[in-house]
Amino acid sequence: MRNEADQRYEELSKQFKRLAEERRLSKPIILSKDYSFRTAVGTVKLSACFGGKRDLILIHNMGVCCSWCTMWADAFNGVQAHLRDRAGLLLLSPDSPEVVEEFARSRGWKLPVASAKGSGFTDALDFGTDDEPWPGISTFYKNDEDQIEWVSAECFGDFDLFSPVWHMIGRLKHGVGDWEPKITYPSNG
Image (tube, rainbow, N blue to C red):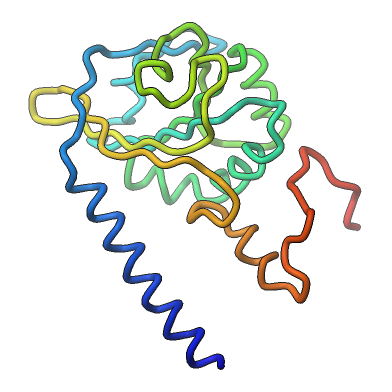
């Protein structure tokens, strides 16, 4: 039985790699403008979020009220140095700059954060709205003409490829059941 499950897992891994390649190779969408986001110290243009790299990973976050988005961001924070070595990184929230930055500080996030509120960015991408974005990830590329290409996008959900929590809990004797992520947990110590 384990051998059969291992074979299925190996095939799924190959399919995930093919899916990533298909998304990467599909025709990108050239953004019509360089959107501005707000931070506690002022505005930042999307083009400046690449961190001197050609690629950008943008995390669409639903804000401080979403325990699911908090769980994903907590996980991304743990690997942010690896991600930032390869690409620019930004977590975009519908909350005000002060709220998102205070929340990030309280969680110990080292992720760069900004507010999309009023930018028109999320609406333009049809990724929800600036006030109520869908949770997910978008990737961008700055081409030789300094145009920003929207390369791919994917929404977050249970058992997606972006959170190990579901996959680990799903392997427990009784699986996920009615468990959901929380903003805070009782002390485990």
